[in-house]
Image (tube, rainbow, N blue to C red; front, side, top):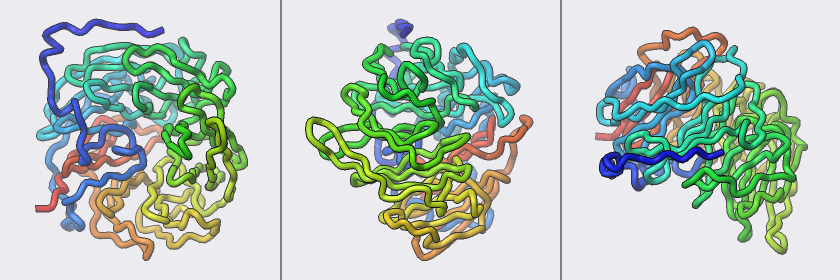
Length: 431
């Protein structure tokens, strides 16, 4: 159960103002300020020179992993593991975004159980920064709260041991959600799929006992629909929504045949929830309507549409359109997601499969084969590329079957790209 540690008085006095509040240009959690892969930051380059934007700095983190960094002010936080063989000796590190110098480094607990290392080891989850604190989930389910200022541990729990969780085949990979005073995560298993903890103490508030699906790899989205706040995600077998106040299952639909590895974060907007998954699943759209007494009704608008079966690079919604990579066609696509069209608005094979985020109307697409990053207009009129480059150095660790899977991050005029132990910072601010 939660293990609370005191913080030395001298540590309390050493505070970085940058981690107390966030700005629109920060990237404080998985997929950005609103967990949708989009930032409202302005003033960035709309086109890159032939050899790409200026490399501001690069660092060797000293360990492997796929977690994306998060950025608040002039501090960057990321996780890795020293042991490439089995992903042991996980750690968190804080860097100064100005020059990449290390501010602090903190070993993390590594609990019971294992996962498949065939696709590369190390932590998969991005940290979540909330005020003075940061929250990190290790691949084996070790969930920790640290002081963002110096990495001092506040509390730690284990999803498997403490809450009956079942470690997914390739390790816990979601990035935890902070919602008000609650931390929400997905241990999965017979004691309840979703879990709410007090973010200050790590004590259990509720576990969704009427939902017992296995944990997949997707991250949770919070949404208010008709006055009912709920947590929406996809488990190993279904799209689900649970009530925020008590974890009660509000709805569950399993029309989309999810299989093997269910990864992409859902897109939720204006009472609609869009889900996509790879391995032939496709995509679906669900309409959520509020009912009486704090309940909702979920209705499938379409399902099993093969037009966009995203594997793990994620998708972004801009207006009526969703952009991302489709596994079956092996092309980047734009779809009008409220329509059940089996043909995309456009598709392109000008970049290999990869991950995507959107900032100031531009897509940052990071290819998984060579570490190529392309800048593309978020336009329904076609693939309009305005620059690309390849990272200048590649990981020295054996790749096994893993590729360039860490999602790009854009924050405060910088673009961050990772390849296992290597982290690159590019200056993309318009002059």
